Image (tube, rainbow, N blue to C red):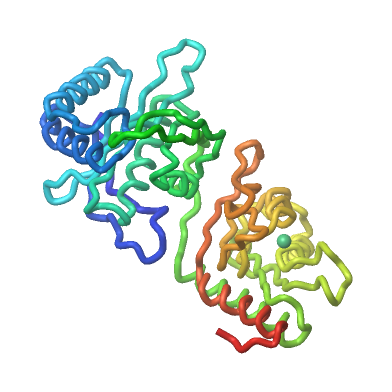
Length: 355
Ligand SMILES: [Zn+2]
C-alpha cells in the first residue's frame, strides 16, 4: 500500500485553517516512537482510547508493535498525518475478521495532537481511513465515541449516524465511568467528491441570486425571506422560487418546491438529473425528500435551521443511506448573511430593531 495523499479538509468548519500541508500515509515501524508519545499524551488528557492514565511508554510501544503486526497480517490499517516531521494525528481501521462480516471495519484509536486540533486534520484522516476501507471491500464502518469529548459532532459532520448511547461503557483514563455513543456509516461505493467538481465562486454567485429572491419574498410579498435557485447540469438557471405559503394558502409552497416545479417544467421532466439547488436556508424534511425524488445531484444551503433542518441539523433525511439516490450536501455558503436576513425578518415582526 503506497497511499500518500494530501489532506483535503473537506469537512473543516468555515474559518478553520486548512490542513493542506499535512501528509497522510500508512504507519511504519519507524513511527512507533511518535505514535507511542501521542498515545501517552492522549491518555494523559483523558482521551478515551482504551487505556488508563498513567500509561507507561513501554506499554504504548508494545501496543503499536502489536498493531503493526496486525497490519502485516492484513487485519488492520494504521494511518498517520504528518507535517514538517511532526505527527499530527493517527487513526486505525480494525478489519473485522468474522466470516459473516467481510464488509465491516471498526474505526478506532483516532487521536489528534492538541496542537493540530481545529485544522481539519482529523476529518481528512477519517476520510483517508474511509478510502482505505473501500479499497479493502469494507462498506460498513462502526465506532464508539465517548460522549464527554464532543466527538459525536465531529463524526456527525462526516456523515456518521448515531445508533444509540450506552451508559457506563468504559472508565475514563483519569477515572470515573463514562457513557459512549455507537456510530455507524455505510460507505457509498461511489466517491461523491470525485464525481462532481465544485466551484466555490459559482456557489457564491448562485447563492447571491437566491438571496435576492429571498429579499423579494420579504419586500414584495411579506413572506418569510427564503429563496432558491435550480441550476441544470449544464450550468443554466432553470428554476427560481421563494416562499409562497402565505399568499397561496399553500403549506407546501416552500422556496425549494417552487424552484423545483419551475425547473421540472423547464426540462419537461420530473427528474432533474445532475442539477444543483441553491437555497438560503437548510431544507426541511418535505423539501429534502423532494430533492431526493427529483434526483437532484447537489444541494447548497446558506443558514442552518436548528428548528426543522433536515440536512443534518435536526433530521438527516437527505443523508439517509436507505435512499437509492444520493444528494450531496453543502451548508454554510453565505450562511451568515442568509441567517441575518431571517433573524431580522422575525425581529421586525415582533417590532424589534434589526441586528
Ligand atoms: Zn421546505
